[in-house]
Length: 254
Ligand SMILES: Cc1cc2nc3c(=O)[nH]c(=O)nc-3n(C[C@H](O)[C@H](O)[C@H](O)COP(=O)(O)O)c2cc1C
Image (cartoon, rainbow, N blue to C red; front, side):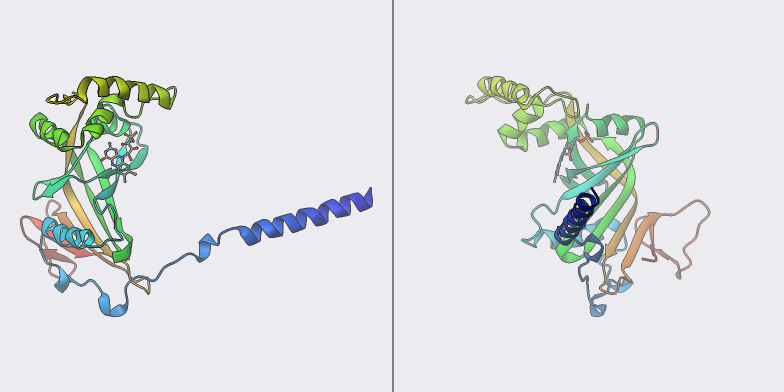
């Protein structure tokens, strides 16, 4: 009995060791970000408001072939009970008025945004060691803009949007494919347009704050945040700087 227990113990030890050997050292995972001569300083800002700066960084990200979807952003919404949830969506337009994306108006995120328009979105472009964080409130885009964008999508994507009641439980993939086949038979014919479902459309995030983060090798990362002035606040030119178009900016500790 004693020998059996001892053998079992030895076996257990060697198993644990080999599992440990095989496992990935997550704690040791780290990449080198930018060198000290590539810092992101206030003098490097191409614009004193966040949209111009976003344009510069986004367009640079678009030139990098390693970044397949530079417009992918992680969007966080909050439930009425205060529970946050996050998922990726694709940025489909931006300008001085805000950042646009499209989705299903019956989805979880949409239901949460109906009750609480406050959202946050984050981009991360690994090869550039850069991230942009946006915080603001969403508004729905006009029906006209949603229709125009819907019809600019490839027809199979239009059909998929019609076939999916996003975020609702579904019995099997077959059910989806069946719906897709029915719609294909109906709409994959010449001269026929897929009507945009009323439950699908766009949002615009009107930002209150946009932060530009650049990772440094020594972990003393650069963070420059644009935000709107709080009531009674004045830029002092030291911690808080006057920007353009009603924006101020400040450097945050990493
Ligand atoms: C890279 C990427 C891009 C995506 N883009 C969109 C998008 O633009 N719109 C969308 O509704 N879902 C998009 N999705 C799917 C969402 O992440 C998510 O699964 C879906 O919107 C349902 O989320 P919800 O249940 O929280 O509402 C994308 C997923 C990935 C990984």
